[in-house]
Image 1 (cartoon, helix red, strand yellow):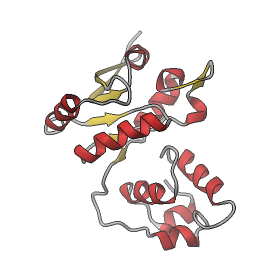
Image 2 (image 1 turned 60 degrees about the horizontal axis):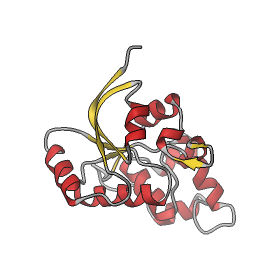
Image 3 (image 1 turned 180 degrees about the vertical axis):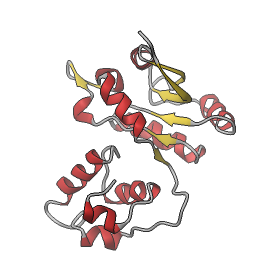
Image 4 (image 1 turned 180 degrees about the horizontal axis):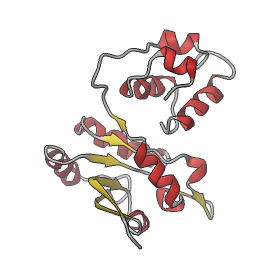
Length: 178
């Protein structure tokens, strides 16, 4: 089978993730060995980010978020690939290795930068006006947008950060543009 070449370092939690993704993607991988990401791994990613693109693809759960946040705090140029939780469950286990090839490839097509290269366009007031925060159905609306844009699970503050990182505008959200 011909593998898809991906010219970035993909950060995952474990060997099973590398075995799974590496079966169809030719890339360099860094394994965090679970949520206890070492100082050595963080330092390596900081140094590697000077010359290479770093993509974090952790499990869609709390430990995965902790790893993602720890890396992003130290490597601001990092890009995020989000696997939707509902597409990452198999045998009562949640993880990247429990997803499928199409889901991983889709996540890698929709990389989200940690920080916006441009000035933030959206505000919390915009999210409130659009019903994405402060209303009974806001959570469902955020989930729909997060799913459509491959943003991963997001509360209001996180959604705002990720939408601004993509350079999305209020008009984009109203029109349903991506």
